Image (tube, rainbow, N blue to C red; front, side, top):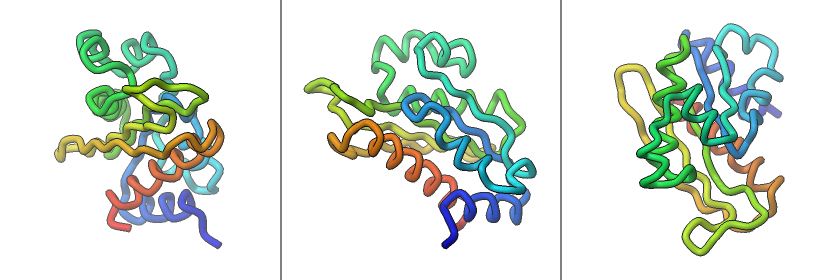
Length: 158
């Protein structure tokens, strides 16, 4: 059975596309899934694990005013993360993830809320929020990893 990461690596290689990731709540799980696949070095440029707000700002250029206005778990932050990853890499396509894997959350930002962004050279940024619900930390993180891989696959026409 072919995994999502296998599909992504094959598509990106076939299209000559390079990929970067910007991850918060997944802590590098998307990058790890990609780099588990032989041949991924031909399509994976780099991954940014920016768990703290300070790391998001220092490594990806996330703006303090955006964090203050929207909080770290928001589509505007995901967008800035994806744009920053694209600008600070040799990639053609970047995916970003920020969310609340749990346990916990709040009334306004519940456990299982994850914001994604996809940035492509010359095409702008697309964002979305997925409410995975209180599945538990491991399952929210795995679902987020899989969703990010699906976004990349779709962006490459798969």
